[in-house]
Length: 287
Ligand code: 13P
Image 1 (cartoon, rainbow, N blue to C red):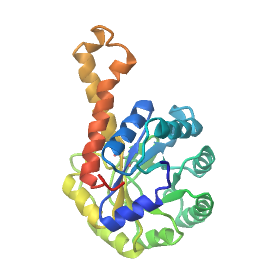
Image 2 (spheres, rainbow, N blue to C red; image 1 turned 180 degrees about the vertical axis):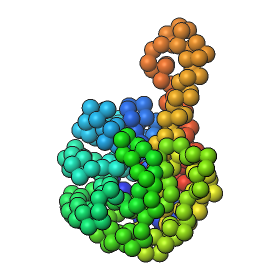
Image 3 (cartoon, rainbow, N blue to C red; image 1 turned 90 degrees about the horizontal axis):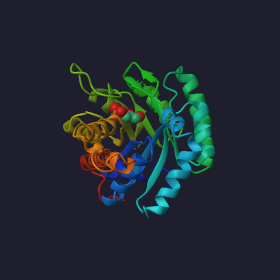
């Protein structure tokens, strides 16, 4: 069932668990995430960055694939199709393509411009029944060309953006896209607690979910995080399993080169990673 992310995130925030946003790259990724969520009876969010959307030939292709797959696979759990780190133009493209949720990342604009553009997009998204995420502060590192310095969010600015009526808010709290460096100081729970206090019941979003230790994930959930984004970890699992298959020479045995065989270990590896995260985030059996 393709739905907006609003209700699933409000329930998660109330129930003190988080819904995973798993970024998708192609058919295997999408199928792996949808099947695992269904098996675990968990709500799920499919994240699509602008780069991944382009790679899959456009947001229209992505929306059509996801909708058809939900039907063909008999997926009954709530699924949101969400634009990740969207530009202003990207948000409109996804609204037109039939996404059920968007993120407008105005974090690199001066706060007044972030407020102005977010206000407009909240209005448009809500009129059409989509949910919308906004960002304050920035997520460190790089994801599909989106680069952030990782500065912690100002809680007052978070309140300003939350008051615009967004459905979920990403606040930079020292989190980073991609692998965490060995000298990473950890999440700033001081910032998260201050943001949480300012924004009331707003579901908070933790980007950069790859490699955050379990105790920090649990603490973040206890402080209002209701959505956790995971991208790199599925890529690493997929790559490792594919490497193992090829290095074992399995692509040379029989018809091991058949893409349905060649991509199968990576597909299973994504499923295992998604399963592990759904368990950790506590969203199993919450559909
Ligand atoms: P990771 O790639 O670090 O898991 O981050 C994902 C993310 O935050 C998507 O926006």
